[in-house]
Image (cartoon, rainbow, N blue to C red):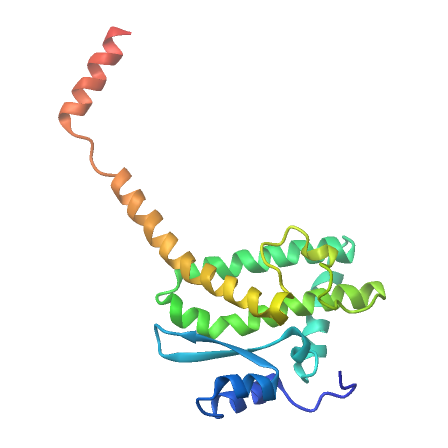
Length: 200
């Protein structure tokens, strides 16, 4: 990893967008990965967790997350676990409330991936340990629903993508179930209930 990153994540992503249709070559040349958003016809690019550390955004993201940890009284690992759980819940709730989950995931996936990786790096920095290498699961991610380092972050991105899309669909199904449950009770059902109550 370069000790002095020279390129921003936005520049990397813009370069990938402009690189043409050979996505495999772009991945190889940039250290990025991608997902096809078939619903919108777009390609969503995101960095591997290693590549993210090589961008100018990395140290700012780590410091921003570390500041959140320092604002509480709990140890860094405990604060990080609570932060990750809350951050994921907020993301999925926002996805569920969005008018179009496909647009939402396209606009929010990369930020959430990098913020999560930054949390892992922030804890390591705060504790004076080596940054996560992907070979083992850091303590803060034990119990987290995603393997954030598998396939250089690709497995995390794919699973999170699916959950964000599902969040909107699940909200719609729950709302439909609620509407059905709130249908007016028939007079016949009310009379039957009254007779049963009278016999008790």
